[in-house]
Image (tube, rainbow, N blue to C red; front, side):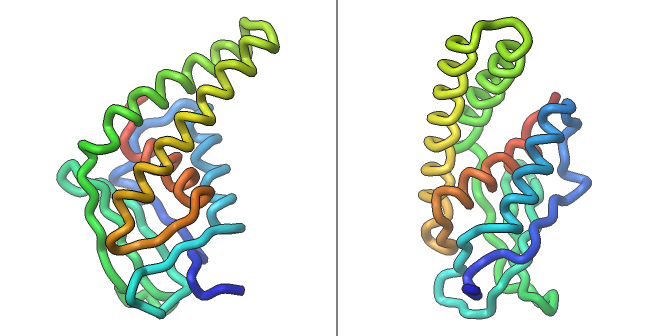
Length: 156
């Protein structure tokens, strides 16, 4: 198994936004899936596997990376300005999707879900670009991280 991976992902409890049942479910799935399968490499460092703590810090996303002994490897702060609009759009389309599940035809649900997945991929690409100077992740890891970023950012 690769050392360039996460073995645990923690969310700073003080940073967590109140969540709807759907958002809480998505958060739990993202955490589980991230722990099961991910690609996470701190550029120029070979101290993995890693433990990642995500938090909000003065309006910025803080990615605090530690090794398995708890020693800090690096902290990377990302400005949320690049993610705010896509988080807002993603939150709206998720709400539409969950409403559609209760009230719409299968073809309408499928169309909204396709848009939701496309926007999720776009958000993952933005996150990959923001991290590229310090941390390398694959698309699936970035998608799951974006879900967790939404959990920290979105107020429900």
